[in-house]
Length: 197
Image 1 (cartoon, rainbow, N blue to C red):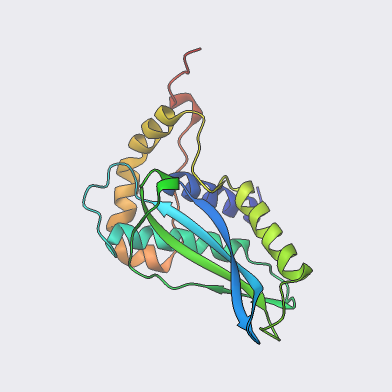
Image 2: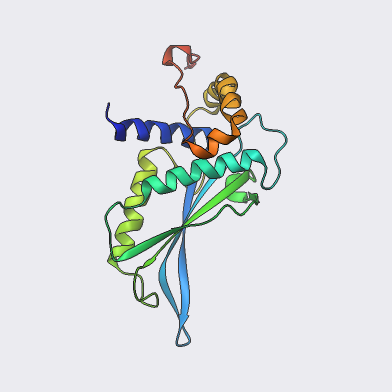
């Protein structure tokens, strides 16, 4: 397994852990009294682990979610220089409750896709292509468009509960959480409960 595959697996774990979803908003600007779409805002949303009870805006759990979302955002950005540019939004220390996400407590990270030069120009094929590639990468690591879906919620909850001691150990290492990417130890498949037909 090469480094790219290893990183992809680590990001898949983060997507599952924080149930990452995304949605896209058009970025508008008024140019000579005309409302013009000049780019996109790609919003990544992640939520607290099921056992977190003491959540509040900007809490340490929110910071871990934002750190994971930032790692995902950095991974989906195009590597080569293009006529478009990308801005990753800062941690805003807020929690959002969207009805689309069943009012779960979400931390949001926004990636803005714009023209590198001529910021008043209308969105074009470069921004479209960048957005499509980012969405494809998100799909590859298991993130869901608009809302989190899973085939078996009970297996997911059981798996997260089994991972809880390791995740708490990671969370207790606050200094390392910000200095290094989050890493999870995958659980062997034979420990998952068998599905009932």
